[in-house]
Image (cartoon, rainbow, N blue to C red):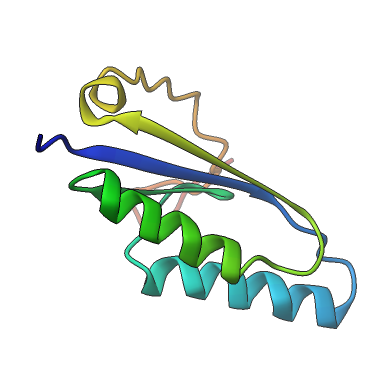
Length: 105
């Protein structure tokens, strides 16, 4: 039976030393090259078309896990994924978008 699924990878990797930062960047690059897209800073998702593809992607992730940190993998149906509610807070950006030459703050 053809049923599209969504794999969601959530991770928390140490990034204090230069070596840890390099490993975290390598992990993110691996996820992007494997077809994942970033949802938020440490949450990536990928659409897979069936269980066998999902299993092979899970195996690929297990083989490329970073040496330190936490990685969680969630598999949900595309229907469940489409029901996600997104809530956006107020922007903290203090850049003023204006065509005036002089702006008084």
